[in-house]
Image 1 (cartoon, rainbow, N blue to C red):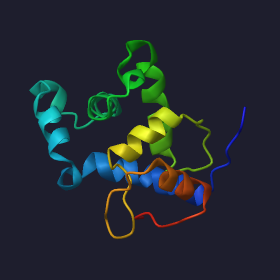
Image 2 (tube, rainbow, N blue to C red):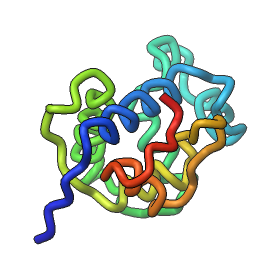
Image 3 (spheres, helix red, strand yellow):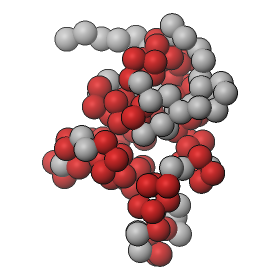
Length: 136
């Protein structure tokens, strides 16, 4: 097993981007807005949750593992830990290429010009500290 070491700056950037994406509806793609509007009003009152984001990313990417109820709680936990890195990059999380692929394909992380980063390789570069060109 290969253990990738992510830089603290890269982890913090990822966490901040997830938090920003979830809270800023102006950056949501139309498909996420439509998905969110399709959720019952009582659930929408809490805002976009990590579980909702995972379900939308599964729809958006077609990655069947994200939609699989057997793995759902694990993906929710891991994405929650990634989000926590925005506040505390020293927290442990883990690697999951499926989740990182979905994050990039869905444009959750943005570069310094505000453009979505849609290539997993660029996201990995940011996390490893190779390229710090993500919006902070």
